[in-house]
Length: 94
Image 1 (cartoon, rainbow, N blue to C red):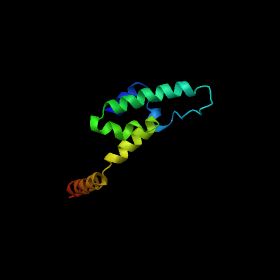
Image 2: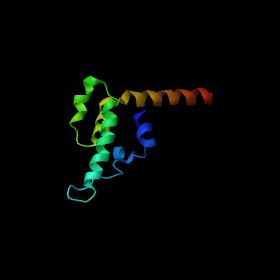
Image 3: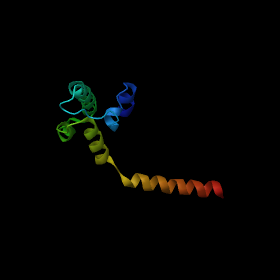
Image 4: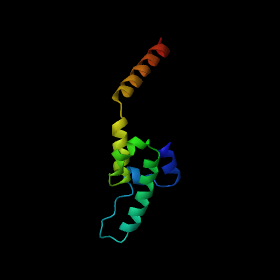
């Protein structure tokens, strides 16, 4: 849901780092920080209160996004999907 919201605001690049972090001494650094902080805030506001501490100290939106994705990644899901596809192939091929 959050990916949908961020994408609809035209800010998905902050999650994927297609909007690269601007060097601290560059002219656009302040604007980049403001935009990134807004999006990081959107992500953190969607989290359960007890989880906010885990992500609040991370420096960028991309860091929050990747940490959350890593935390909830379940390799079992991929193997389960593969098994289901194999079964579906066997059923339709019979």
